[in-house]
Image (tube, rainbow, N blue to C red; front, top):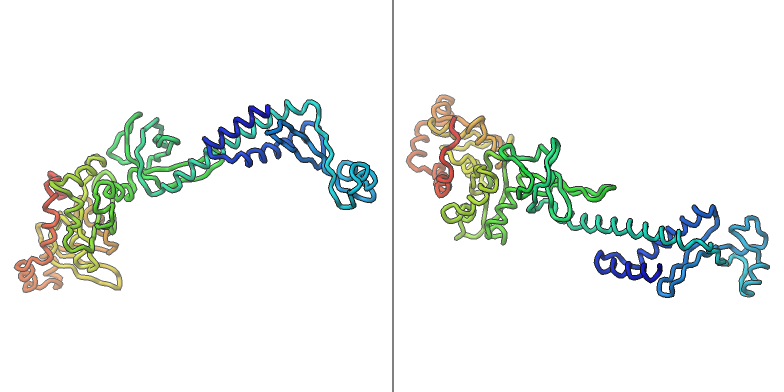
Length: 383
């Protein structure tokens, strides 16, 4: 048994990364419990397992005392000195008490311990691998579907895709290949549990990092993401390098880069806008593809009033308020949209200023940034 066990421990150390010494200690502790359980002993014992020599001994440990009150735990000084004259009070004497048929119990116990430790080690390895991949994306294969979860194989483990994290415009079938965003990794009694998402804004961000080299290497930075999964998303991008167009880098030549992401998200529309420290410019950009005439800022309430041409009001608001809602999430500013005529009647947008804005088209020009990829979508969100 010892030779086979030694070989098994060497293999486990190489393949599973489990220390042989750790396994031997665990086996010895389990053998102590097995001895006490099977032989109804309450002695203080230890197991000496020497695989190189092929020996296994159960040793009872007894304290040397002047007067013995419990013979299972104590030994008199006189008896101890019969074993070795050098013993004195408070020393510990070890006496071998190995039962004759203990080998069978030891073999079974060792097998159980090794199996358990291997299982624990594998779970630990998987947990450590995936805990570092939280907030990252992975390729997965749909295994099965039920009313609560989609079970997605990530290779070494199955992840759970809850119904709330599934895109409404997608149908999932076994063997489908999908990209998922790892939202949470938990350590449970049954091993690591991994939760993934297809609707998380982080998925969109990671997809852009994968497809756009300028984002991956840090030349272009994604500042914020607002997403209504399966329908429309907005991202804001920024760069400190003057000759780099952050929006153009994300769009790619003829829209190729963003189109790859749109295809992965099953047609989800994506607006890419330029980030700015100036809330006037940023809010105007965020309302793309609508044109903006004026942005009035209330810094105390972190709110803005946006004035748009009358014919652009529906486009600025979007279907069911989606465009305005996403712009507010993207900028983290409250946005109240008014048409030119309403703003003029309210006295917050004088005619003279309106004419100047039409001539200068200062804040209108941001729509041109999106012109390079507007043709990716056939229709805009107009009520």
